[in-house]
Image 1 (cartoon, helix red, strand yellow):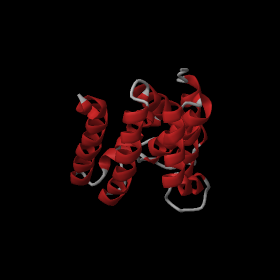
Image 2 (cartoon, helix red, strand yellow):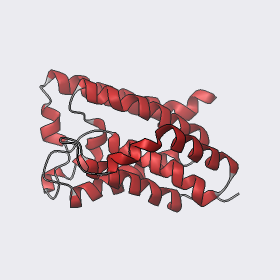
Image 3 (cartoon, rainbow, N blue to C red):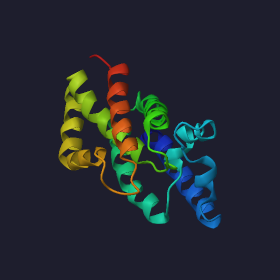
Length: 180
């Protein structure tokens, strides 16, 4: 069934929005408790929770569209490795932010989004097969300008999460390489 390919993505989006509702009701207390705090032992759990937490309803909504589009493309073109790629991106990208991020509470799914972007583009390069190449071209044309988000400059935005998420996506593409 086609729905099976997207089940994990639907669950992820449901969890993100469920957490957002609880966070909103509690005055965003979850961010302080579960957000990623660099180089703090208490902030290590943020590696897992950072993609599920957001700073506002607008923040969660802004991340939903690229999560649906890039996650959907991942589910269609890389269904056998989509979950593994996601785990690698969250773990490596989050660990990188924990090690190197600025002192702040880091929240949001944008590191995962940038990771999926990096994965889909790098996968086209490393695998050199028609479907991954087409996905890489499509992602580059549709979301290529987001690459500027890896640079510092916008206050309140974790560019480190963007950069390290994208790098983790590239690593995941190399590690999960499929050969025809």
